[in-house]
Length: 386
Image 1 (tube, rainbow, N blue to C red):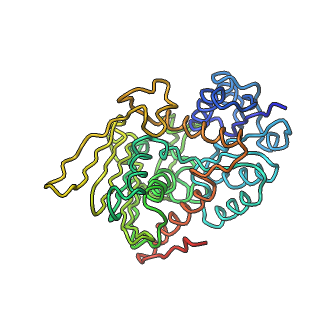
Image 2 (tube, helix red, strand yellow):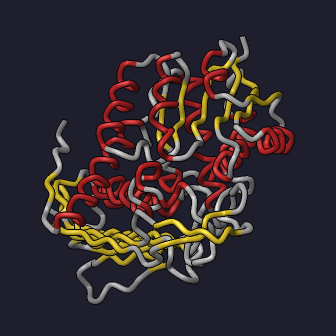
Image 3 (cartoon, helix red, strand yellow):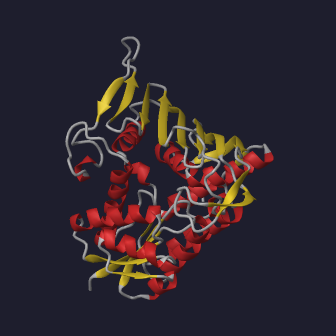
């Protein structure tokens, strides 16, 4: 029987999932269809379903979980609902792709990790930046030893979606529903990239968090995404961080620095990775998505940087609409590549290893340690061997 694909949460990120399924499902050979978009807002669910070709809508996520015709579920809800809904879908035997962060607390992330281990369905966490060809290429060169022994990595994820103090207050600024702010919202990606390239983190040596906009006006009506809306004359406190930075020590002995900001004016959605080894350096910015820079010592003198262009042989480029030289790969493409990988794993009945629920839990361990280090002003060790 043809299995149905459902998206739970019709907001901004739900649209990214819908686009990925619509684009890549025909390329996987999986016998599936775009079935249901679920959201409390009938208008949002209807709009998303119409735009991307889903058959129907629903207003209660439990209706989707209980539907035997649904076999694949994307969880695209606010952070505080990720764990509950993902675990319910896993318990019902669905294949589940859960948005990051896996949970707002480490115990909740652990419950989801354990549920995924016990489940029959295939599952994953949304870590789409792993699929940027330059990032995957850098990781492969580190793993092969081309850069020598890893010494240091820096990962910056800087956004300005919350830089305007007149943007409305929402669940994103409440600790109970969002957890740590920029740290969980975009720092999850920074931490995952650090782990993806350098391996497990053994200790958060130090961290610092800042709330730069201490209160925001409550909206006069409903809010969607990061957009401006009419504001009331009442304000509410911002309870979680606008900026967090942390110093890491990896199990290999290498060090790392990650920083996450939602108030970095002018950055948009900037991701920068630099990796330093005993023989070479690799660096990438998503502002120049068609290449990365590489410098490797060969013993003949200074090692200049070479521009490593995207090629048809680069990781993932074969999935691009135009798999040609110098093709830039952005957020939407990397998201689609992830969806393709997930659907292919479902079609082949094998685990989704490149961004698993386990990876989501490992990232949650580091995120929790960063938050505790910033709160206590003391190092926090991580038991990465479990």
